[in-house]
Image (cartoon, rainbow, N blue to C red):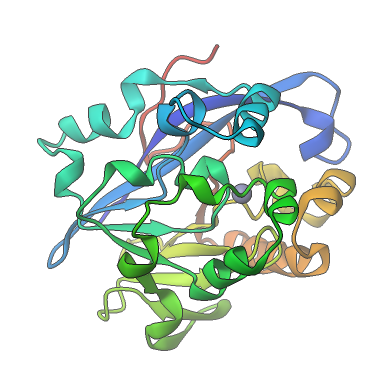
Length: 274
Ligand SMILES: [Zn+2]
């Protein structure tokens, strides 16, 4: 079961913010989402990336519009989920599940377009989001208005799945009850943030989502400090998660991140860099 990734959008960020010792020059970061077909369950997405629903649809709150202006992601129209799925002869209604790694806008922006998907996410992250003040959510890039109206009813909390030990990483949740795809808790970046481990690949693949923005920044000497301290849910936990992902990577595991700008063997739809 080999996942593939599409790049929903490009977002500019000064390198200095996301890499220790970096320059002030801008880096164009990807905003990936993943796709695979589970042999028993069917087509599954990992997050949705940025979509027009979150960035330009009418009726968005002033806060969400301001967020869009501030970050100004450039959507890759050819890599939006509906076009991307066409490559596989599929439509959004065919998606059976979406693994939501956390609730930041660039991961949940398109959820409303998948009416038949069960929504696999951190139940703790979701209940925290409901308890947080609006200001706290906004400060952390969380906009509950992006979630489908029936989110609670469709939620399948990862915490309801059995937990198992996986090599070098924290005990993880067995998403499909067959050990093939594990939700790996990687706290710190956002409430309930987790990665997705594909155990059956020749080289196990960890999609470590937003543990860092750049692969190079996983190593302790290259980790940025100021920016993650400002926006992370828990900076200490983030450092610990980065240590675990770096150890997995250094021992030969394959690691992908949502935003790293280099192309990988798993990227199938990249979109031209602006
Ligand atoms: Zn994030």
